[in-house]
Length: 138
Ligand code: 5GP
Ligand code: ZN
Figure 1: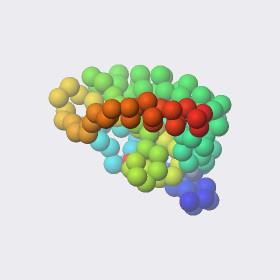
Figure 2: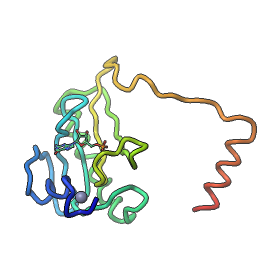
Figure 3: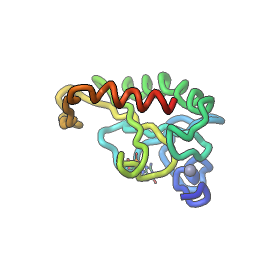
Figure 4: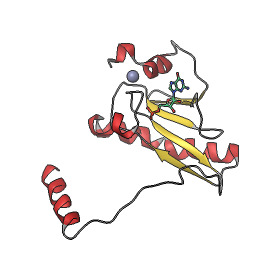
């Protein structure tokens, strides 16, 4: 998807409406249209970037530098017990809108959201082999 057709670029530029809670020259934070919980917010760079691994580090630093303030305001406003910060990258990971964004999802104790996190154990030697392959790409 090009930035021309990107719905989140249109939200950033004000071409289409969104319930914005914060914006400055670098980021826009707005309420998700389909919230998992009240206050579920998306924080994104105004500039069109698709995924974490193709976002310039400096831009990512600028976006993340806004999270403490935004997350703090959200949990205080909705009285959350905790929150998840999620970022889906690629269709396989559930990314639907190809404009990098971070979900801030307020949570209540015992709310039952994200109760299933499938985990498994590495077989003998596998963790080290995978780690070595990753290190070779750094
Ligand atoms: P993803 O799956 O790409 O990480 O998440 C996309 C999120 O954007 C979804 O949670 C969805 O509800 C939200 N979303 C999609 N379109 C719009 C929109 O036009 N306005 C707002 N506020 N949220 C949107
Ligand atoms: Zn975009």
